[in-house]
Length: 215
Image (cartoon, rainbow, N blue to C red; front, top):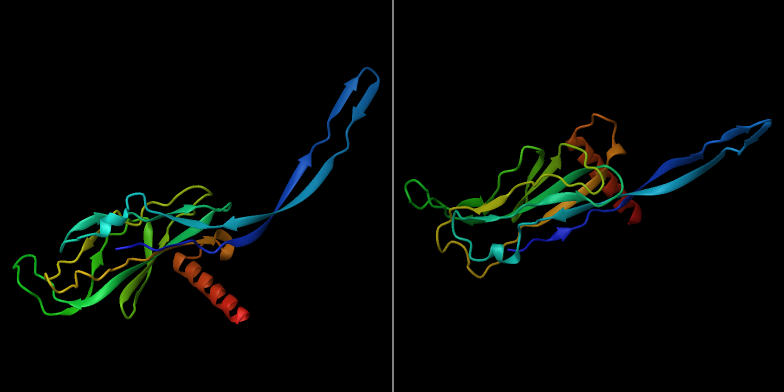
């Protein structure tokens, strides 16, 4: 099992900063001296970038996974930009039509379209979408709090668990991947109070508009 990491798109946002050198005054006997006030306007581009981290994941974690067995995998997003941002994670779970084993009766179940791995999302992550695709199910989660620069979200989950598949129903030579994609979205992309699902939808619409303009 391998993990594909993507860096989120960098979005530039102009911030106006003002540096003010206040006037100073001193009185000595009958003399008064002062310096002129100087104002300099500085235009600084801000960056929005999310960086996927998985401190517990190693390549060997995906080897020889038994039915019902769990392995450590803990995706999170670090704010690698310069602006506070909303963080999102997309996770794709591979799907196959296989037979499962009932853990209570130990009996074979009829073949069914099945997600090969399960996970339990931490409470600070909100499920925004679950989309069934041809060979996978795609989950989109949004983090409930803004993340400051150089700070990191909580882990989306701590482990993944293989389903209780019937031995022999999966090809031992086949490689199954769980792509995880991190996205960072600038905080002022929508009015204050806008829900995470709406923020993510606005982002998708902007991406689609950019692709259409480039075509």
